[in-house]
Structure formats: C-alpha cells, structure tokens
Amino acid sequence: MLARIYQPSKNAMQSGKSNSQNWVIEFEPEAAKKIEPLMGWTSASDMRNTELRLRFDSREAAIAFADTHGLAYQVIEPRKPKRVLKAYADNFRADRTAPWTH
Image (tube, rainbow, N blue to C red):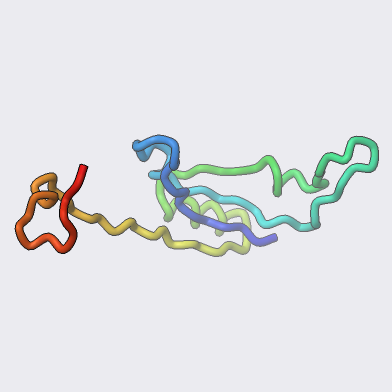
C-alpha cells in the first residue's frame, strides 16, 4: 500500500494558514469504492483509505514514521504561492495603461 506524504494547502474559506503547517500521511486506496444496492451510498471496505489520516509536525517525522513501519511512500513537495506586491497608490500612477475608474 502506497502512502502519500504532503503538506496540505491553505483553506480557501479563511485567510489564516492554521492547518497548512503540518505534514500529513494518507494512504492510497487498495480497492475501488462500490455502491451499496440498498441505499445507493458509496462505500469502501478499506479503513485506511477512508478514515486514517496521520499528522506530523515536520516532513522528517512523517518520513521516519513511514520508514519504521515499512510503508512505501511518496513525498509530494508543497508549492509556495508567488507573492504579488501591490500598493493602493498604483491605482493612480501616471504611466498606467488603463484609466482608473470607480
């Protein structure tokens, strides 16, 4: 079973980066999900796939955990967002290509 080690992205609903500092181990599914015939709900027989998510303070701690338990893992490096520095005064520059409107 392959495990993915990654750093989750920032929540799009809030401006803070609360849960994006930790590293997470998630497991790839062993079998495909199936639809139950009675209710039509989607279910999976593998508990690791659906319910197990381990959090670590650092990347090295997550890799050490995977190594000690003999897990095959893949590390996904986080993409850092590119910062665009803007100033309010740029709206009123003389060399602006498009005129500023309300």
